[in-house]
Image 1 (cartoon, rainbow, N blue to C red):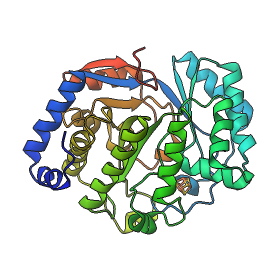
Image 2: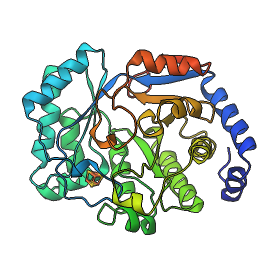
Image 3: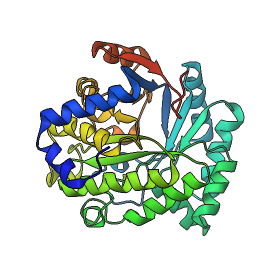
Image 4: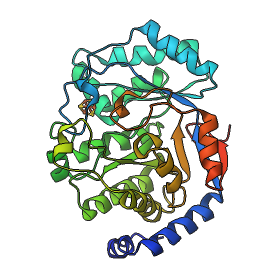
Length: 335
Ligand code: SF4
């Protein structure tokens, strides 16, 4: 277990040692098993009052999915064997807590076995503000409506000086931590994420990882860590930052594995952000999960990959890397 910042910094500058150590820890944790989930992302609206400089999702033509469209998509997902629906959207100013609960109830009513993985801490804060409800009460209402777990997105880098540059109007680092802690303590697990490769330093990345580790030690509520390399296409931040190169991206997965071990043991490589080949390569740099099939994913549409992948293709990527593919649920149980 390495949580000494200086040792982690030294490791970063010795890629071969970092590579070996991350691989050894992955092996120790899950041998050659690499997991994935069959899920569908439903981005119910792209209307957003946010100003995140890395986002191009909200700049497309504004839409709102109707309840009928949402149910149709959930039905198609079930037909294709999905065990999870992931719901995220823009911060539409007119959406109240009851609207967010309504979407969960709608899907839960028709597909009661489907795990609902929904609403980032930023969305939770947005609906709390709009409906003048305390965060804790908001989370309880969501849970009552069928919420199973939350995406730990909107974390970006949990350092306010960095947030000021990339997403000045988003919730502050401490607000993110408080909402995630509150969710975990109410029995709502979440993923953890990190958006890297823009204006942050190595120290900022390490501070972010240590923040997540501290929360995990307190609550045990993180299911995994998802590394999200910044994609510089079609957004304002892309004019200031060109994104991390491949080695930096691979090393970041390895660093997360080492820094978070043994507290967060699932490290996810995002095929939508990395591209399929690089995501497969990350399986040799500490990652043990390739995320979900998604079936469409609005927020990642500025990435270079098609926003959907077949489960069979994920299995092929995993096996091509000499690993054993395992279908999992959102909470990492084997299917
Ligand atoms: S990242 Fe999310 S909150 Fe930020 S501008 Fe885009 S849609 Fe809005």
